[in-house]
Image (cartoon, one colour):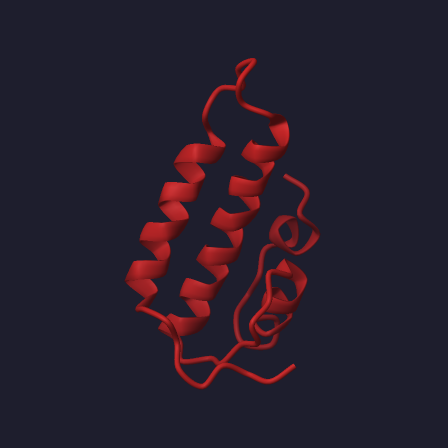
Length: 89
């Protein structure tokens, strides 16, 4: 996959987007809100947070939604907690 040369927005912008998705993910499920929608926003919050870290450190990344791909770019640069690596909290 080619790496992005220009980042769309600042790390601060991406953290703001992530916070918005996280707020939506924390919405209580109702008969009108599907679990799939809440899970989607949880994944988006995680993805945008990881991209904010990469952008903030000037680390190029491919256009992807894969959390593992983004985490793999960080493994040798940062200390990543085991629960983040495994996705088990």
